[in-house]
Amino acid sequence: MARASRREFLHGCGLGLGSIALSQLLQSDACGQRNPPRAKTPHHTPKAKAVIQLFMAGGPSQLELFDDKPKLRELHKQKVPESYLDGKRFAFLKPNATLLGTKRKFGTYGETQSSVSELLPHTAKIVDDLAFIKTMHTDNFNHGPAKLLTQTGFQTFGSPTAGSWVLYGLGSESTNLPGYVVLQSGPRGPRGGSYLWSNGFLPSSLQGVPLRSQGEPILNLSTPAGVTPESQQRTVEAVAALNAQRYAATGDEEIATRTASYEMAFRMQSSAPDLIDVSDESAATLEMYGAEPGKPSYAFNCLLARRLIERGVRYVTLFHTNWDHHGGGENLEGELDKVTRQIDQSSAALVNDLRQRGLLDDTIVMWGGEFGRTPMGESRSPVGRDHHIEAYTVWLTGGGVKTGQTIGATDDLGFYPEVPSDRVHVHDLHATLLHLLGLDHLRLTYRHQGRDYRLTDVAGNVIDRLLA
Image 1 (cartoon, rainbow, N blue to C red):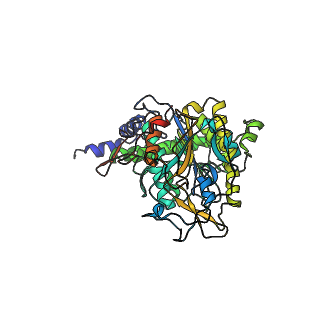
Image 2 (image 1 turned 180 degrees about the vertical axis):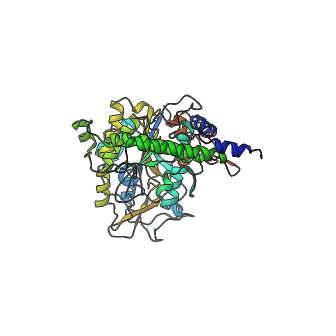
Image 3 (image 1 turned 90 degrees about the horizontal axis):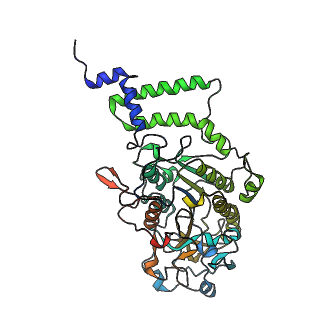
């Protein structure tokens, strides 16, 4: 009788050594195959343990919201000085574009005397709890690549997002929900689609999971009619056993991830519906957010974000469209008013609610888009602004962020940083985010195709002024 090879022996054992091997793999923190991966030890003592990213997809106009420029109003419809435009390219602007002063009224608020426009009255009330960066800079003026850079640190498809990197470095404290969750609102999804929450070349257990706030929280999660919990459990166990055999034969780590995903889906059949059932929330809380149960909205997603953080989820991204106000149908008048009303009250409510519940101290909240808007107007009716990458505004709070300050200022036209050294790149923001979570962006690496990759590529510096 021919002697069986080691591979044939393990394959034949199936439910024996193969299952043992898979069980050990799923328990291993190093492999990252548990779904979600269990919590890991950070590189250094963290200030935060979770992140809520409020992503305003399309590029909100800092000149209508946060960056008041009286000189720009004074020079309304005048030509831009040539020195500003030398060597610069824009997505849609024509050579004869003129300066566009905003019609919005601004005020100064809080002890910090922060500048906020009339469009954001609720945000104006929490300015002392925020840190503004008014000199953010990015590399690409097209939506898709700019969104990818903001989310992944690269302008091309195929790289892991910040949420996946954080989950890779820290794991998750949640056992019944994914460690990285994505919520969407607005008239359409963000340009870039699922690549904006992709695990890239990291294990697939680290990808963001889109969660719906109405109907089935996750598609195809409900148990089919006629299937009992007992029979479903037996199915999951049978699939795990078959996967164990295959893993023993191939050593493919994605097989372990697939098994973990089945088990997570089984647990989520009860945890996901419970998450979106907000009947345990007080009427005062719902009113504070402006959220209506059963009605999908940015406001409801902000409430869900808080509930996810409470349940140990590590990273939550809320995408809200549409902020692409070039003029015409998508304009700086009615459309901008509409989208700011959709997000202002609930964004402020989220910050206040997290603070009241003692969650803000270790949860980072950050608000912003992929870029800003130009000081020049586009020749459309009504007028709008083009994409601007040289200087735009984001704000952060919570989780070790030094609030009550503004980092950087722009020139009189809102075109460039007033002090060039105040420029903050997307890589710098990523490096700082990881630092606050206890991760060194230089050490958080993954070898792929012979190269050690990281979220910040080969750049990025921690923004020391942003640290409490």
